[in-house]
Length: 79
Image 1: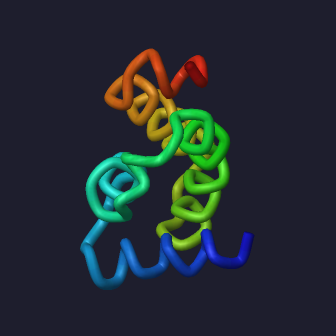
Image 2: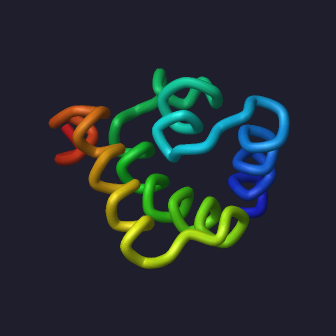
Image 3: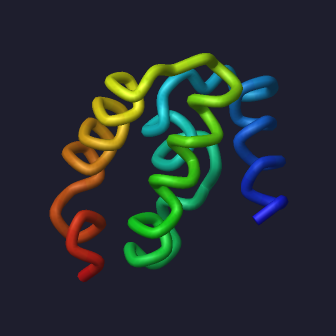
């Protein structure tokens, strides 16, 4: 998933994304994609953000939880 790393880099550098929801719901255009794809991508995006922005495991968990809450039930359950 090298393309995913590139998209996250771009969202952080060019789009000023500071949170996972910024990337997945606002900056990337991925919000129009199938909810299953977002649900599957979210943990990998959290890991990439964590590596690039120095997040600890607590921040990773909080970001994933925040994303799922804001993205809604459809993304959480893949429906």
